[in-house]
Length: 360
Image 1 (cartoon, helix red, strand yellow):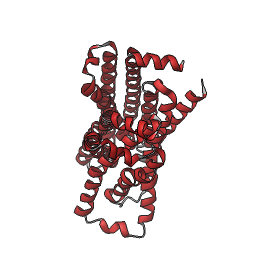
Image 2 (cartoon, helix red, strand yellow; image 1 turned 60 degrees about the vertical axis):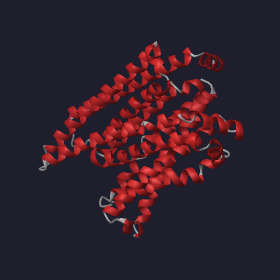
Image 3 (spheres, rainbow, N blue to C red; image 1 turned 45 degrees about the vertical axis):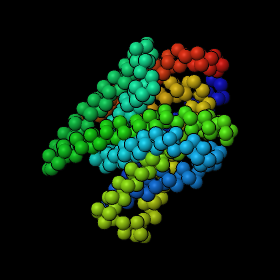
Image 4 (cartoon, rainbow, N blue to C red; image 1 turned 120 degrees about the horizontal axis):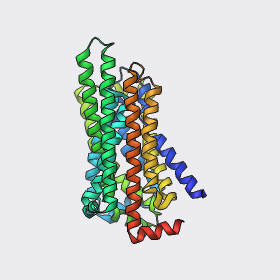
């Protein structure tokens, strides 16, 4: 294994650890902290402060690239970024309803399904009739089955918890609501992939006009997506702060701890983006297929490990634990099949073949 390949996978694993762990610090805020008091600052850090303060040091001419591209070019990444923001916001809500373990599994399953099919349906429907298209669709179908299996685990977990809970009906309704939010958030979060597919012209301007390497140029598109997400996520958090009259808690002495936790969550979230970019760039064509499979699989595993370590399955039945384990395995198999389809797609194009030969 060459140095670049080793570093590529190392960065991707670091990114997956960040992506599967960004929700973990939320477990350490006081239980009486309103959702919006934590997640409002989190989204402010993720979508505004970190991109504005850090991204210009990664991508030269970040703001100038957006200006040169013009509104019509940057509009679609921003619009789909707005939808991604809704997904991230609902993922945060689902953590509160069903915990990290189930929320990560269901959310990532939804992301994989729409994130894989969305760009194909928009840009390359002809691929669906080719061999690699059938493989990709098979991978999506397996991932959908994995989501169903994880949903079964959630139902069993809810039943076992209700056996010890006097409010049986309320527990079931909460679990169902959390599952719907988690899957819906996954579909909306997948708009990140669709938004990114509209960023080719922005990346080209960043590379040719400002001399950025391809992986650096991607951060210009990432910034546009995050800024679009800022509109939806911060608007909702502002609405919750106003509705619940919790603005005052942002000025309380204990807010310092909450802000530190929100910042750690934001650094983990955007760290996943940074390390993914570093890793995929070093893997070359392998980043599209194998790197993607490793990232998503490991992020699902990390998210569930965090859920187990924080006691989310302590009162769950052994049957429900076996079902969630099976669901994770099915999701990983689905992601691996998708990776194979992506590699086949890459090899089917002349540029893909040339790139692969150049790395061998």
